[in-house]
Length: 209
Image 1 (cartoon, helix red, strand yellow):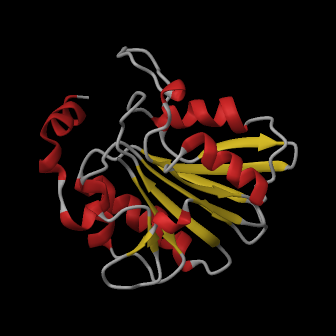
Image 2 (cartoon, helix red, strand yellow):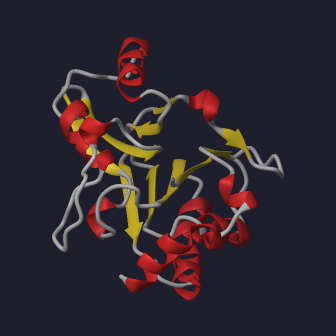
């Protein structure tokens, strides 16, 4: 069911990166604010541990080591809805009347945002459907009233929304600190206790693709 890692503390070591990927192998995305107050995004489909290590060394570490970058958030996707492809990797960029934002999601959206079909063609994910159907073009600036409206719409789903100035954590009380108390926060800790072998059918589908 995906995991979001809010990297506000120490560097995330590779063994944690690998643990999160092992149970969420359907795409890695990063979003952060650079020194020019711009939302930056890095996405990758990673098919094996060697590619994961390359992403960690070439993409993640330089971003984390550059201290002009802030609000670094990483998403490991487990595709419960929508095809496994580059377009369905989080984050999703969108605009409201107040500017540009990026969003990551952990959970399963209400039925009206989901796709109940399988196709060889591109199918959007429930997250993308929520972004385009509820947030895109709205008047939201994510004040307390807007956040209440979002929670009424999505229930216990967890979101991180980034703007050039702020980070908004929806249902933040559900996020957890890792077992080593490194000041980073995670939308769940399933990856600390499990591995891909708990999802045998899913693993077969992943390698088949």
